[in-house]
Image (cartoon, rainbow over all chains, first blue to last red; front, side, top):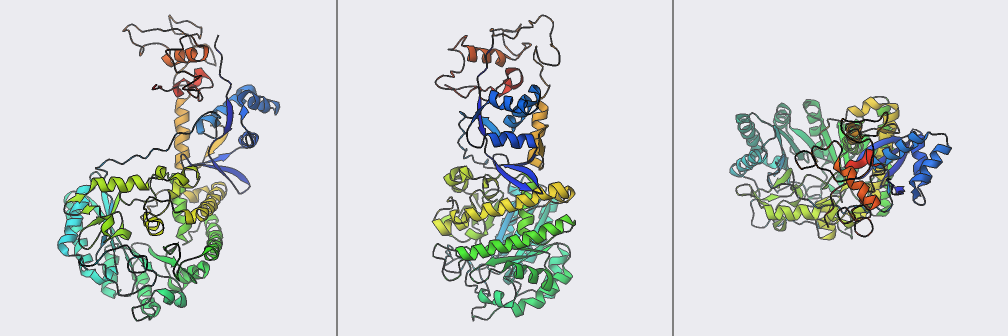
Length: 485
Length: 109
């Protein structure tokens, strides 16, 4: 005679949310989103305070009118998905696993120069929190180094049909001649093996000219402009060395860029800092007065004391309130089938569509590397020219030991505080660079914005749930969105 | 799935994975009617068996089913996972052996 163990169930790890008067659940171990029916919500409600025995749960369900077979089927379904689990199960410790040494590279960020014609007061490359050690190093990347970088990228991207090159600085357009050479060289080199290269650049827009705009449009180079908003906000910190603001210089150039360049979306990247927190006003200025397709926002990176530009708690609260207001607008647009340009929703939503479950916060050191003007490799552009973070050289390849150390530190399983957080599949502890500036360790969780991340993720989940009920076709538009951040 | 509706790609993969487990292996006494291969017993009771080659791959029932019975009813406590001291959760995902036997995993003492 076979006897069965009497299981007692507790609720599994989950984040529940309501949207459009329906019940949903987000499963952090998988990154999965499910809608719940009333019977499931009922079972989870019974497990809210304490574990309940299998037989008692089944009996309660049959008392409510469910057949024995249906009750057993429901409990089995919930158990297999992980919404309920036996109460004596010990959750496995998160594994800190490394990718293979030949993990194919997908993107390089070429720091074509570390020089800049602006002197933005919050800049992580030159400002108070800089980690780069530029003394004695080349200021501009040479064509030889750039070509070696392209060769390194194509050699290291085995199995990929397309790779990506991002041009970065300093101010990227201070070395536009190199950029032009790299595009010609990389296109030809990739074509030899039947592959493609796509391009993007980040610029402060001060040096845009009509011929440059023509080139960027003709070669479908994606353009991200670092800009902080209307004139008074832009000129608060995005200034020349003389202290003069840059808004008046860039405005006509941006209008020319947006009017001419139609092959890729033109996006604005706003750095929020003390006094520059009115995201609604900034968004509408950049979207409607200037004409950017998308606008993304990020708080300035700074140390604990924040200097004079860091955002304190009140500042962050104001930013989040603004985010919520723009999220309302985003959802209104989506319910009408229209795209809204607030990319902080679009980016998070596209990760939720896929069910992203990150081992690391971003591709740095995995599919993406930064290249300094001298050809040194770094995890990403934010570590360029920082001796402590060099991961090899384009000529000699990746230093696998240093890369493995970087990735082991940055793995979400190595961040104790993250292991119990439901938002970890998308956050994974946050930016490696910000962690280093703030805590002195690239593998430290960015604890200063945990609440912020959870609140924002919950908000985008609610948008997701609302669309799943009221306009599910709209979500399909995000299935193929490629996020390169 | 009857009670959960998958809403993103990862949820749909989980759903497909679970659907693939349904009905791909039929135990002897599994509903809707007893499934009785030629030469096999209808009873669902433990016993150590080998196939014609001396292995377990050719058995008409999964060997895990026998293991499970030993584990629960202590037929051969030395040869199965010890649910008293070292592996209390070995069968925690196996509420019904006929359905969930594949959740029983190897134990390394």
